[in-house]
Length: 93
Image 1: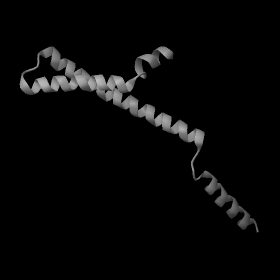
Image 2: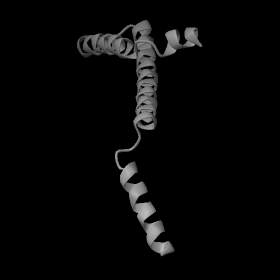
Image 3: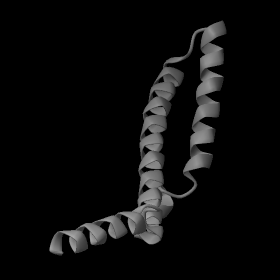
Image 4: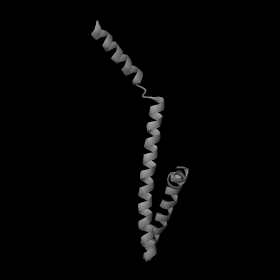
């Protein structure tokens, strides 16, 4: 599990930054001249890697937010439990 984490989830922000920098370099070169076949393939692979890393980053952020919500709870939970208990008391009277 640690090995998978190191390969796929570690330092996603840094990896995204490097991919974007290389994509920008190739895009700039493409504006002034033709790209070689290998560069076109590399650019295509970089776009795929960028989307993959972006999805992984979004998933990790969602999981962290969900974990935070589970640990801290919803700010309105106490209020809603209070409303429900008062309704149950008023219905039983």
